[in-house]
Amino acid sequence: MKSFLLPVALLVSSTLATPAIATSNASSLNNAEQLREQALRSHLGYDIVESLTVEVGPRLAGTPADAVAVAWAEAKFAELGFDKIYKQPVTVRHWERGHANASILAPFPQPLAITALGDSVATPQGGITGELVFFDSVAELEAADPKTVKGKIVYIDARMHQHREGKEYSLAVAGRSIGSSVASKKGAIALMIRSVGTDKSRMPHTGNMRYQDGVKKIPAGAISTSDAMMLMAMKKRGKAITVNMDLGTTAYKPKTSYNVIGEITGSTLPDEYILIGAHLDSWDEGTGALDDGAGVGITMAAAKLIQQYKPKRTIRVVLFANEEGGLVGAKEYRDANEAELHKIKLAGESDFGARSIWRFDSQVHPDNLDVMAQVAKVLKPLSINHGDNKAGGGPDVSILPAKGVPVFSLRQDGTDYFDYHHTANDTLDKINPEELRQNVAAWAVVAYITAQAEEELLPLAVK
Ligand code: ZN
Ligand code: ZN
Image (cartoon, rainbow, N blue to C red; front, top):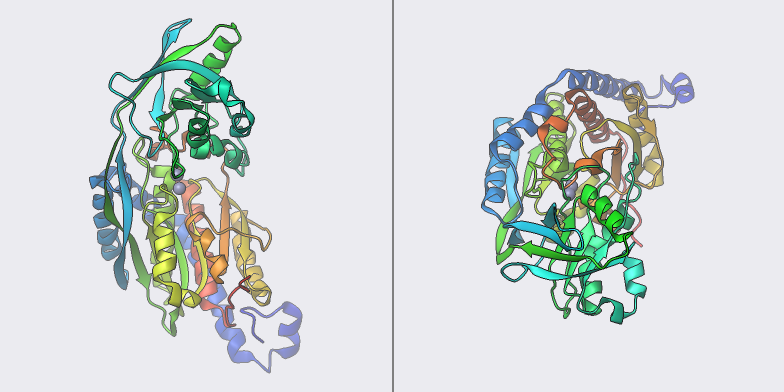
């Protein structure tokens, strides 16, 4: 019998044939339940996020604070008594925000709350002034006649609404990530977008953007959703709107950052890994409590709590460098460890805030679905449903299934995640300690049960 726990019917009929396996599996299951209850009482996850946000704070990749975060992570793994701690170099861009101001000059002058998009070029001294041309989406901009755009500042008003799964993010984010290149190709002088967020506040949301090769780089910023609403109401007055946008960004030489890795060494299968992780970098506006300090606290704490049960397989916690710059640390991790990826038997990243988990998904070999069913059973008392076998695994690990690595997702309630995401409001006070403990419990259960599984954990078929 390969599965971790025997189905009840088989237990009855074959108990005598396989008593040893049944006993050891049963004790693993007992341990998993104990671990879950312990995690629900543990402050460790919260203490780790508090430590990161208080002692490091904002930690944009490539900045001096990023280096402080790397040193913090190594020291924290050591303080917690992880068996093996090491880091892997990653080349990251070094960009800093500087000042960001914007205002409407005509027809009804007033200031706008704005932030630069990550990697945006600066405006000339004193800012750039132009008339706004309005679009609802990047798709609409793509279809526009260049004559209507030339010499103007493109404004994209892509909206998103609160949703447990953050459903509209991938649509709304297109304006942020490629809007400046699309606008530039049509002759625009700058890009302004409605923040990609679900809040009603004057906190603009930053985030990554990328200039396409060979396209003239134009400055790009996001105004708060409150200002976006006012601006759209002003547009209804039918008069041309002129704005000034002043961004003081600076691009420096690329720097070396690190993926920081801590392991709890497996007792009998040390060369097989259950990888759990989060990203260590954050945007510079807030303290990165939700994105992704919470994930750091959840996964470090889960591994630490498992340590006392001496897992069979190794629990590897990877704190990825520069996720915000476009999975930069994750791609380096994948490429530098190419020959060893088959040893990773399951991987998952926590990167969607700190609210309660409501669903468990996997993407594993069909023969391992019974192990996932056992995991789901122990997650059930945490009010977590068993979902499907189509998990993405989280941003940084989402690139691993293409290499055969199985993944899982513990899906959090993201209803208010995009209220705070990439804003100055992403701070520790947004974390509910009780919900964070539920997360730690769930991560500990998944990692521990899979680390103990009696059956061989198989790779995914690579297409
Ligand atoms: Zn993140
Ligand atoms: Zn982020």
